[in-house]
Every structure is written in structure tokens, then in C-alpha cells.
Image 1 (cartoon, rainbow, N blue to C red):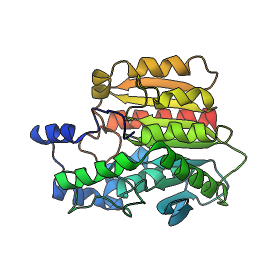
Image 2: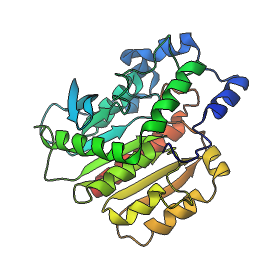
Image 3: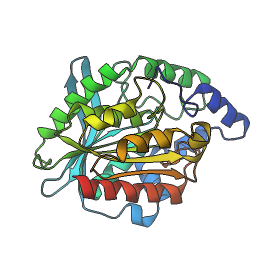
Length: 295
């Protein structure tokens, strides 16, 4: 989170990637901006599933109105899932990912974590991640997004899900997070341990550190199963992270998995510069395994 160092979620790293010839070009962003284009870019097995229906929603929190996207199968009730996006926020790629997860049998709420400062999308074809000023703005938002604020939002999002007719309230709620969203899944699970029963972190930002306020120290207070999918470059920079995670997960009876993937930080979203289809598909399948075992 904002007070912790994450070497793979910094402006310096983005500058390094740009110098390496990996910028997000305006044309590339525009090509992926439409939901149809995103769906076409995914493997066929990624878009098969239950018929779903989605809608834009507004969630009242203690600090204002959070814009979000809610999508669920068109029939029956299903376990709820909160999705915390990466630093580029709620955008077409994450709407598509939410729809895919709904097709797998879940009622999914994908939120705008930056609603206090800007409605989604916070990036677009003109103001994309490759623009230094855009990155500076988003890192500024992130620095203000403290654990208490995340917990305030998580409480509102959980209440929203439980009020929806598509959600099976007899079953646990899951949560997944990408990059900065990784710690948010832990905060959510620890906030309502009797309600949140699964948390998945994909290339999560500083989910386990040697600091006294490290997110992983909250895991024993939760009752959730956990999946931590760690990027290869994150692991190289912080090799002790997986050790710290296992130290709190292994004594617990709940489902857990910690794995380093042969992919770069940010490999999961299909609109990312380092998207890795094979690794993303594996991570997706492990998320489904977690949810099946825990919800």
C-alpha cells in the first residue's frame, strides 16, 4: 500500500520499461479499449460460460459515491466477489474480466478504488499509462489510499453485494486484487472474517514485508483461503515475500497457495504491456480452484 515500497509499482520501473521499448502506445490502448476487442484477444476457452448480465452501479460509502460495475449470471444466486483493480483502475479490461468471472458462476463487483478523486476510467486512449503526468496523478491517488479508507470502502462493497438478489448470502464472499489490489484483498478478508472466505492476489504490491504493519500479518485474523500469484521480477526483488506469506498461511487449516509465476509484474490484465496468456490462464484456473474450495 502507499506507505510501503513496492519496486514493481513505481514510476521508476515504468520509466525503465519505456526505455526498454515497452511503452503503452495510444494506438495500442485504443485497439484494446473496446470490450469486443478485448474479448477477441482472449483464448476461446476464456469467454465460454454462463450467460451474464452487467450494470453500472453507484455505492454509497462513508466518503461519497463509488462507481463500480456489477455483473452476474442471469439465472439463480451465486457467491459474491469483489475485484480490486490495479493502479490503472476500473476500465474495459477489468469489466471483461468481471464478466468472465461471472460466467464462471459468481456475482462480481469490480470497483473504482479512486472514486474519491476521479470517476472511472482514470486512463483512456489520450490519457494512458505511458504518459508521465498520468502516472504521477495515479500514484498521488494511491499514496492517499490508506488501509482505513480501503476498509471503509470494503465494508460498503460487502453490504452492497449482500443486498443484491443475484448474490447467494448463504455462501462466503471472495475477493481478488491486482498489483495495489493485492493488499486490499487481505484487508477485506480480515475486516469481515465471517463473511469473506477467499482472497486472491495477482502480482500483489507489498503483500508481505518486514514492517510491523505488513498486510500479511492480518491473515491469521481471517478465515479465508488465500492465493498469492507472484511475478518473477517481484520475487527477484523481494525473495523473502513468499517465505513470509507461507509462515502465516501454513499453520492455518484453510486452502492456500503461494507460487512464483514465470511472468512479469502485471501479466494478468489482457490490456497490459506484459500480458502473458499462458501464465494468466493458469492464474485464472487457480483462482477458480480457490473459490471452489472456499466459497
